[in-house]
Image (tube, rainbow, N blue to C red; front, side, top):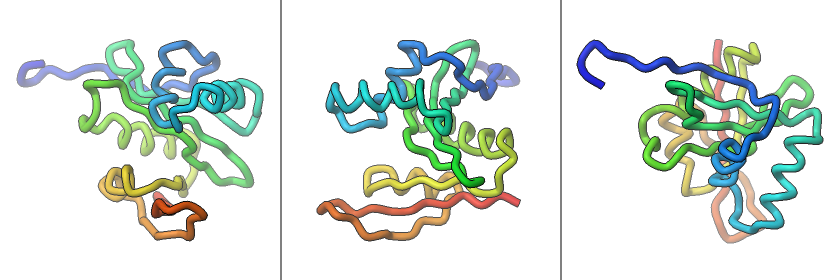
Length: 144
């Protein structure tokens, strides 16, 4: 895109998990085919789970799987298309999602691999106990 050009980008709630959205979500999951299959199925059957996509020029470039319970929005999975990383799509998706759901708080739990993303996206990061050897963090985005 040249100077002065822009692309159309929108937040969309996925009523159906397409193969493209499944692939994006799976990028954020532990790479075990059975576990991925069960998790994707939970997005189809659990009414507290929803999937949102950040769509640019008609193509989903980032997707978030969330769970809503007791007024809290928790990001369970956040995946971005190859070649679209580090362009702000996931950050924009999370902020648009919070506005769309009219929530002041979005939470996520992550590890060392993604904690800096959440910090750069404006989340407050706190270390939490982990039963595994990897460090874990609770990330909270508070919007006024």
